[in-house]
Amino acid sequence: MFPIIGFAAAIATATGAYGLYWYHSLSKEEQEKADRTALGYAQELYGKGLSELTARQLQHVHDLVKKDYES
Image 1 (cartoon, rainbow, N blue to C red):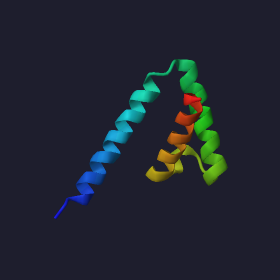
Image 2 (tube, rainbow, N blue to C red):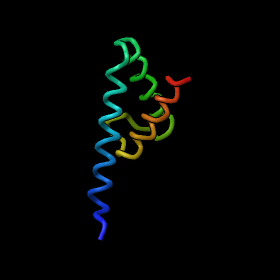
Image 3 (cartoon, rainbow, N blue to C red):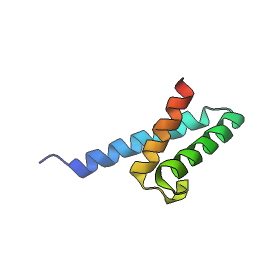
Image 4 (cartoon, one colour):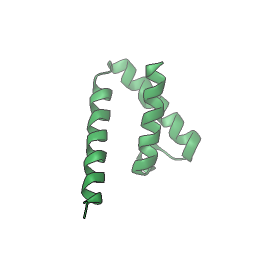
């Protein structure tokens, strides 16, 4: 049987590690702007602060913020 939980945990860990790498590669000013953008998305989409989001919601917000910076 394939260890689905272990595989999912490994993917979540890798995704989180990449997110941290991306965030820390930004300048201090860009980090502050990204933080404000993420908070705006969290409040707009979920009516919550970042610390109140589920892991899935937080990943969605992170993906949206990254798209803003790729443009």
